[in-house]
Image (cartoon, rainbow, N blue to C red):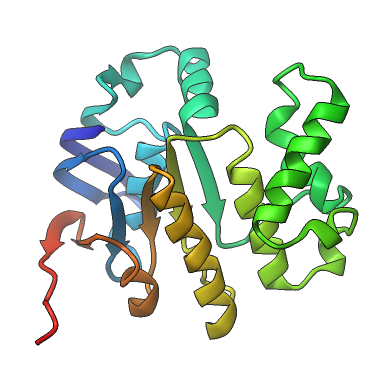
Length: 227
């Protein structure tokens, strides 16, 4: 479970103080699926970065499973992130000179497992996202949708408890967007917590609940049941 208490994030821009998050209080239980929505500049990506242990808030506390993220050392936080958190980005963040399989192996390289075991696990994950026949292709030889599916497979490499997704369908057409979201829904059904930033209403509809950020303030959006 994530717990955020009075989290505020400010920074300076051209001599002015900008508040990206304003006294944010939020609980995210295990196996939740949250969509974070809001206008550009509302603090969505800032919130995701704080949850991922990549940006210490100006004030307030952030804990994951009772551990205070920003009272840890950098090394401790990096270790926790590697064990519990996976990331999906709009821009895929694949290494251009590595094959699809090698990209999936990247998080496994610190595991000290033999390279053959790493490759076998990476191939299993690529098969899960329907890309076993593209394992040795470079990112430039894959469509955008296929690249995002490689990124999804890489996210699962360390079997994370939490997946943080920043606009995971932002560069995709509608058909591919649906496919990627179906995979994220599967990962949620495995028992994982999904926290997703999106501007797309159809993508947000996959989540169990929606948090709207407006000028750094969180508002939970109540679901409207179909008649």
